[in-house]
Image (cartoon, rainbow, N blue to C red; front, top):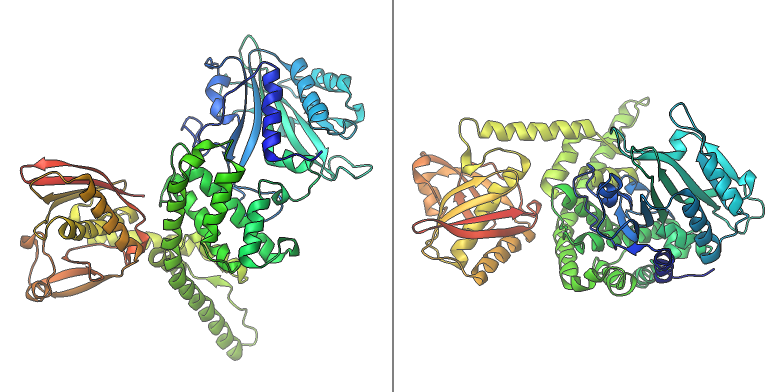
Length: 596
């Protein structure tokens, strides 16, 4: 059968609602912290409290289509079937119905609703071990429904058992997995070679409860692929509009295959995930930590593949709009509400990284050229010389520290050249950088830093930009009166007689971000105190300076005498956001801000 994504979504929900289930809708992609993972990686994950016994407010029969995210296979994205964002169609029984009803309903929706051939369906059940018996009950139930006995396979615990690792007294039990031939037209498909899993029903019957729980998970993207008789998931209507837009922008054809096809898949997947994360109820933004770092990595990977496809990164905005306005407009209405915000954040991150990418790629090419020259020189003097194929750790760290290249990006670029990166050397260079920062701070926490970690150094540099912005927006007489910096935030005190207006706060915030996006160099120079004053360097705490002072200038925007340490250029700082402006003491205001 041919079916659209919207039709498939509705058929799943309508079917289970007809069986007395309540559609509980999708929740945030971000994990709530109870399961130890950053993102919801499975449809059942948000329901763990209820699978552990907590009553659900919607009752005992639940269903939904839940967005999920996994990045463990990110390097595989670009093939026909891997994604970072995907959806799971689920239904649950919280101590209500069990195997008899569930096997019948799964069989019914697969055959009667989705039109799969029952004679080609295969299923696997638990073969049993010392802890739990063989699941003959499920096997007999599926056979009674019409599954061929020779299509029922008993498999061991690693294949057909579900449990929450490292816990005691939690639900666990056998699962019943369903398989269908990847090529439905093949006359005599052989299990398992010609089959792929399309979903599974978990029977959590061994928790100490009066009744068992049922958890069902069927891959939405994969089911859409099967039902349309396709072998490439990027040819479903989840992606066809996006692929057409990338073809139009690039002048290349997806069906021609090769690197252009791979680039289109990566861009299509990564921007879908970007839209979902920024448009999530939690509003994830690109940053250097946590979920924000994963988002930034995915976005920057998409931007780089735009260059490989020879399209402007503005194409990312067109792709994002297709997802927001056409593909997920009904399923995720919050995306439409946040459309302007989502597109604005994509544009800001794109512009930020494009600037860094131009100079960073030049530096990367220097590394590659330098390695090639060394190999050529050594080969001339030593015919048995084995060419080096590893980019040094210090060079990789410079790309990270100066140009904002995550190690993963440098590794990807190196792999395209047939090279690898010295990861241990990178880690050593990182530690050395941190140690130098600690030495600089020995005996004194300069600039209000509580530590000299990478983030604290970024926050310290941001205080210079904030100080200059306050002078520009409020008054040249504004001066820093103190600061306190941690890895998570900055606190900045300055002299001013009244509360800032919302317009003034936004103007300061925008000015700081403008200077960050300009990726200004941070230049260090030692000079006499007299020279520093003559060149209009600001000395916030004059009593701390001797006859020779350390100065830092950030373009022409900021000039300060300071003990450091600082970043080398502003583009690595991220997005500056003022969280609060309040009184500190008489005539002194306090700003609390973060780098996102």
